[in-house]
Length: 119
Image (tube, rainbow, N blue to C red; front, side, top):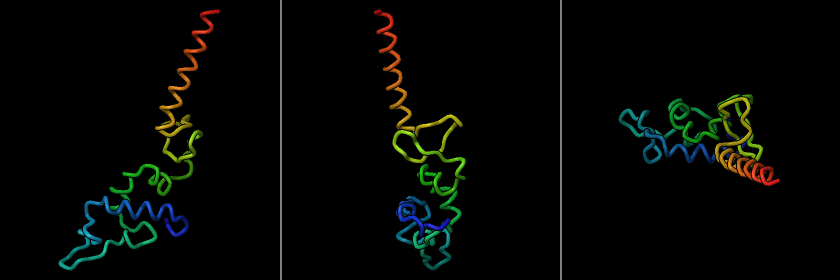
């Protein structure tokens, strides 16, 4: 995956490199063999580091879904438009919007039930 096409991905991925347990002041501890070695993920425009891809990138679920997963496995939220990885084939909303929509629909159901009972 090449990040040059989208500045959004590049910036988010660069910020995530600081979350890596092997990142130390711009250097990679895994590549350190006595001499300091620059973290390749922090200076590249693509996914190079397998450790970053396997352990760090999944920390940002939305970015991980956008970059790694197939288009079939990623959906856009009908409410806010954010990308998310659905847990089922019927999912329409991201986690935050799903909670909000569930509460809204439950309130509508209760109002409808109340007014039908009154009539």
